[in-house]
Image (cartoon, rainbow, N blue to C red; front, side, top):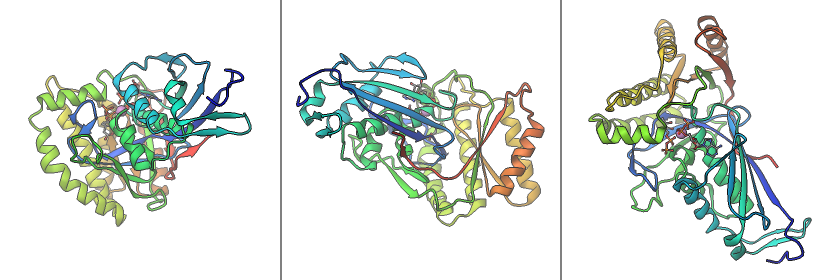
Length: 362
Ligand code: ADP
Ligand code: DP6
Ligand code: CO
């Protein structure tokens, strides 16, 4: 190592990554360890100033092993997902020089250096708001910056995918497609940006936190049980989703809100139907979630054309996409009226804007 005088130096990078919410859902793997999905999916990346992960990665010769703290609590990095991400990023490291601190790290030195990682989610973890997506995307992105990895976002997305499937889509802003790929090694199972965050900037995304409690069935085990037991899931993956992906891409490109809302709501409902078709059935939504669906459906029907799309990931929390700011303001009013905060529904609301970009925070 070039810097030999002392082992007291620390080099750090901090990054922020927003979460993403799927409008055509990923649910089911064909390869558990590489995290290869059974269908393509499409998501929208949220504004990083709202729901996001902030991760600081530090490297120092004084660190004897890799350690990570999530929301202030130390977690084990022994799981395959963390190990796969760390290995893949380490193997792509380049020389790093920090002239101000007098630090020089050669490519080969990275093999013997260790990290301390601190990550915070500013929204509920493991509650169906895609913390694993923002979390692993941010981990991979910040490590790549620290180690001067020269891969593009597509290649980084294939590494983030090995942490959590949905994470590959958080490397880009706007609307993003995760192409399932065909290769046995996953090299073509990557995310691509369909349109950037400015393409459809009238949309307003509103997240209603129905419950911030950790879900009982993680996404990973839920989708494994579905693939093992649901007779419906292959029909969904092979027959339904491929058509919806084509229609959804078209709706996004032409900013066709009625088609977008129809596809988004139908796909969320079919994903939850497939969860119900799992044995034993998985219930991610609760009564409040169902009441939110009824409220939006009634409103859309009374207007004659959709004003709001809803979608629910693996949890009870609602993500609603309003066609414009005026509708978003009305929607918030209605939600506050029907689900007053501090009622038994435990519903808090956030308005989330439409701009989303990855940014370096330090
Ligand atoms: P969610 O719906 O929130 O994505 P999942 O069941 O898919 O829930 O994943 C939750 C898991 O993701 C957590 O238990 C943790 O292992 C991982 N995770 C969440 N946030 C982070 C983070 N910031 N950094 C690394 N891993 C994270
Ligand atoms: C319902 O990406 O969290 O949010 O790949 O096992 O980590 P793992 O699962 P994860 O699953 C996300 C499922 C979903 C739909 C989606 O984001 O597409
Ligand atoms: Co997740």
